[in-house]
Amino acid sequence: MKVKIRGGTVDHGEPSLCSSCSFAAVVKGARLGDEITRCGHYAIRPRDISFAVTSCSEYVHRAHPSIYQMEEIAWVLRSSPNGKKIGFVQARKLKDDEKHVLED
Image 1 (tube, helix red, strand yellow):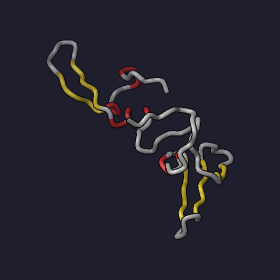
Image 2 (cartoon, one colour; image 1 turned 180 degrees about the horizontal axis):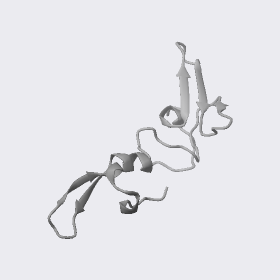
Image 3 (spheres, rainbow, N blue to C red; image 1 turned 90 degrees about the horizontal axis):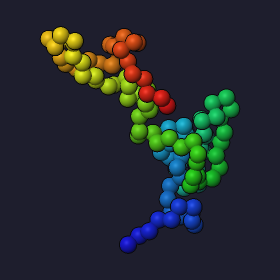
Image 4 (cartoon, helix red, strand yellow; image 1 turned 120 degrees about the horizontal axis):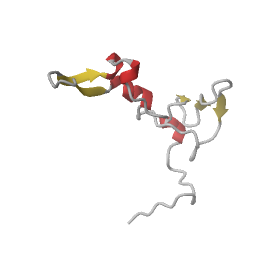
């Protein structure tokens, strides 16, 4: 059984978190050591990262959509007060007073 301990010794075989972060721009060259990583979380002044990142407080996985992106593609089940109309409506077609906005 494999046990993972948080905050323990770093496994140097794992890839950097930056390779899957939505804030990062990773440029790789032909050789193993040819890699430039720029963190775009610091929007005013992006920073170059010169080491493999194992933990980051601002990490956002690029495969997971943000709440805003999920609200944009959401479908809402609506029914009229008299019960005659029922069906799905795209969230972007709702009026502002009809929307329930989730907090970030």
